[in-house]
Image (cartoon, rainbow, N blue to C red; front, side, top):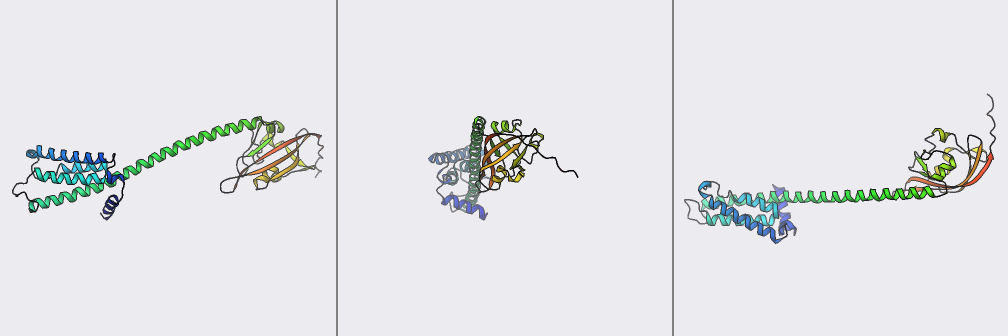
Length: 292
């Protein structure tokens, strides 16, 4: 009950639409007046049927509808109009028609208290419903913006992919900080002589990828020392040279740069590397491992 009273005071003290009449301002007050008049007319017309047991029977629905439609201000206004109108038109038997008569004052006060409680409850429900509608509208707006962002991202990704596919420079892109998936453009796959779309991550180790070795000065480079992996550790790599050794012994020399990619939190979320093909270096003669 205390919470309902606080809600009522908050509504009455705030200059919101609930107090001014939520539906186009003055229209809420007009609707409240019309509902009060209808309640009085119906009560007078059905007086022989309804009797005087429930004096304000028709007022309560009018107050509820007015509050739900227009807010707490018009609801209280409708409540007062109903009480005044019913008292003025429907006389209780055995009374002199005066406000101070206990037979009239008691039901009037009880009806007023009940109607005001209904106003508070309905106003609270109305505000909750409006808040829910606003939240749903914001959610729909967020969903719309999210769909637009996804569409724009998809378009941008397609544009970048198309651009990379025609760039004659071999490019590697690590899609995550652990290089679980590494892809490249068409020039990179052609240079490595691998199928388009193959995962180029050292962690993947497909059959085709395992056939490649990377050397520098005749010594195989560990996977963690490759330019892209160095960039994933946060380093910027410039002018790194290395040799690709194919299974048939052919050697191709590269020079490349690599740069880490950072997210909004300042953490490495991927890396990109670009290489220049320096041409074939002939074939490499690999000594047989010593006999045990």
